[in-house]
Length: 155
Image (cartoon, rainbow, N blue to C red; front, side, top):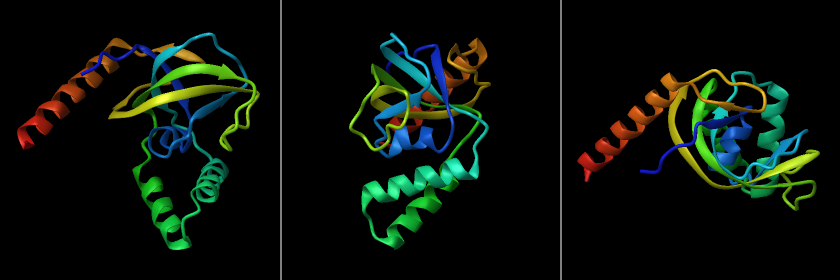
């Protein structure tokens, strides 16, 4: 089990889901960063219907699945999205002003790699990078340990 960073970044849903599960390789920002390395992915509490529709429409355009498959995926994503806590970890490997991905629409893009879902742990987010509080880190580590033990017991 890898050590987790304390540094986190808030991303609104459904974008956090797209990073973890749908291959979104870049996070759009209005500010640049020199930071390279792992960050916890915090799913912000707020989400607008328009943002959700935009993300799901783009995913459908990129994936080119049939309409029924897209409707099923849309329902699954809307049902699975958690908000207001840590949902995963991802590495920031670059910060760019241009990127070939259709997901890139920002002034700056944090290029992402190795997204990994984590057990959901409620936690208050913040603008920019922020340090996850001790209590939330303890809850996250406990959830990971319990999840690993349960997975090993099923073998």
